[in-house]
Length: 329
Image (cartoon, rainbow, N blue to C red; front, side, top):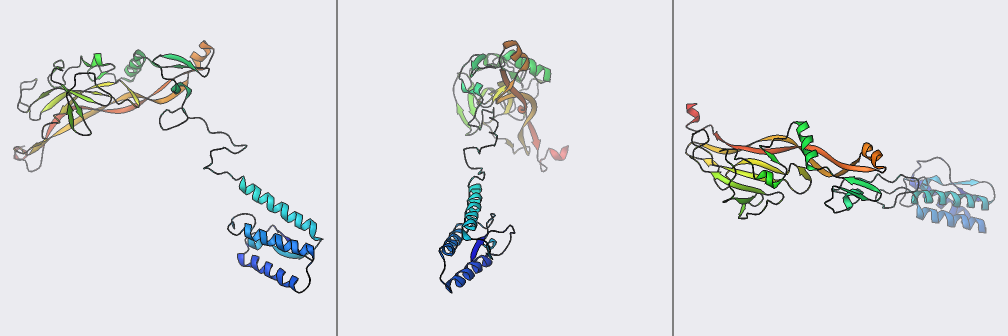
């Protein structure tokens, strides 16, 4: 009597699987098959269909062989049991695209970053101007302006000449070219993306640059010499996201409404800048152990990190190699 079994060996070819089935069918055709033999053939055919496109699993087409052994019923039950276990294990195999985590796997740590994540920190779920508030049983504490200024001073990068934490402070900026206090009577907003000028006397919106006054070419500098490149004193407000400190920057730009090339002398005007380390908040919070002990509950504070900010400082004249002035240097 012929019984279908699964050996432990792997790696046989697909053609052997079909050969076994054909040999079994040919042998049984020579005599009247019993009910157990017909059941074995039916299971073999069903198994061939199930494993047709899954040759990378434990069951392969060549893993079946014909043996003369015990009565059919236990062997058939064994084949069914092993087949069901393998296909059940395959169906439980982890799929990275499933939203439901598998049993026994740890749920990923909930990120605390507000940007680029749908799972935000609880402190970011409340819209309030309060510096300290409670949500979901924890206390959230924001850094105030004086604390951020002290941290900037400890970093050695806070300069009132270039930086201001409020618009009122920014109004006291001095022109980096002439040294005069800003005059906003003829100021305008300059949009970097579309090179557009907007007349508006209200506060500067996040990401905008307000140009207060400009100095034309051949006007007198602070030292009494003539300017080669036209310049403009400006205040730039940091973008809304991510939050940055200080928020206002004093800059000196090449006049955006004037041409940068100087064809008479064979030169052109180039925007020059320098960098400072400032602070930014990306929506991350960190546990404050000391304040947590004092408050008797978890206290989270904003996590401010440093980044490098480029500040436009002056407009320089540079000469090309063919410049008539360059030949005299």
